[in-house]
Image (cartoon, one colour):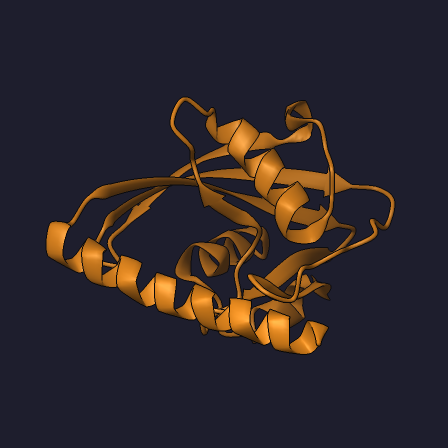
Length: 155
């Protein structure tokens, strides 16, 4: 039964994402988000959302009145069950793109972990999450901002 409920929610996420993309293409709004690169040793945490084809890192929409750093910490907890104090996140800068028709402004953060965390996903929005060696991660189909970050580490 749980598998059917998960499938139902994954379908809802796909439909909602397509509708949001349509809205963004028509109205071209500015959308603010925050993402966090989680590293442990020579590995990075990579996730796969049910509604996207490319791998990414935890993150999401910045809520009204919410700070980007708070969003990054909240999304990390919601998407993969890793709880960190938002002070543990180092601000890397902002990325701007129009991949999805909207003007995305993404605040990027980095979190370096020393201990192996327990990862918990919902199998609805996030369908996989794992630490991948940096060199192997570059072989995956990645969101452009994730690829740029990884390439900056290898130079």
